[in-house]
Image (cartoon, rainbow, N blue to C red):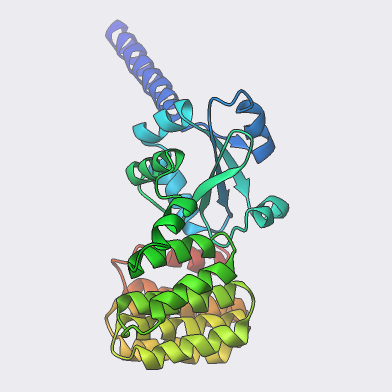
Amino acid sequence: MKKRSTLLIIVSLFILSLSAFAQDAQEVTKAPYVEGFEKAKEIAADGSKPIIIDFYTDWCFWCKKFDKEQMITAQAIDYFTNEVVMAKVNAEVDTVLAKKFGVKGYPTFVLTSSSGDEIDRISGYLEIDEFIKTMSDYQKGIGTLQAVLADALKSEDRALYYTLADKYKYRGDSENARVWFDKILSGADKDSLSGEASMAIADMMRRNKNDDEAMAAYKQIIVDYAGTEFEGKGMLYVGHSHRRGKEFGNAIEAYNSVMEKYKGLQFAEEAELYIAITYKSKGDTALAITAYANFAKNWPESEDVEYANKQVRELRGE
């Protein structure tokens, strides 16, 4: 009995130590941040640290991926503890702040001075090493909009033009973005850079709610870039445009065209997933369940299988 009691005590202490260790590990692996830009400015009021505003939404896959995979790294913990103040802002809640900074996509990370003046931004997902390097360069004046503009004005480098145009685009400055995208397209063959510029122009139209113009632009890309990856991208975005306009039948037809043309390829994978999403948006639960299940079966290696299976469970009420 004594041996058994001793063993039970040892096991209990071991379990408690594991629990404490897990709790401590959870605490130390969570990079610090505050909720809201005003709170961040209060903390940064002494001027010793800049601010990074993390504009996110609850549905944004890449926002969640950054939180889950990058914010738990040692580099992130050190950086957000010692170098900057991070403010998380739900762009669909604080719409005033999102509009003020011209946020057009998620995640968007805006680097500002301690007083809140923008230095520059990262639009989209980056691994933490590249993220920190980019933000550190911005603080030194490297790669900022003003620095790139100064270089572009004395250069004929179309790639540099694209970098500048992209910066304007994600600040919501469509007019200046279009100027530099057009310089890429002017007199150039239909190469990959001009394809990217054409897609970016169509995307600006879409984001600015110019749906008819965006649709026409995507259809023109399909023609102009036939036989390239941009044909597939254009076809997908025709489907996306129909779906956003609640033209569900046209959207499904467009996605089916992509699946037929790109059997077994990534474009087909994306199109099949969006067929399921379209059925769900349409309110056709039975077809949505079937479509999500088919996606999981047909693309077992896809990173979206978990998402598709979750949709099946939720639609079934499980």
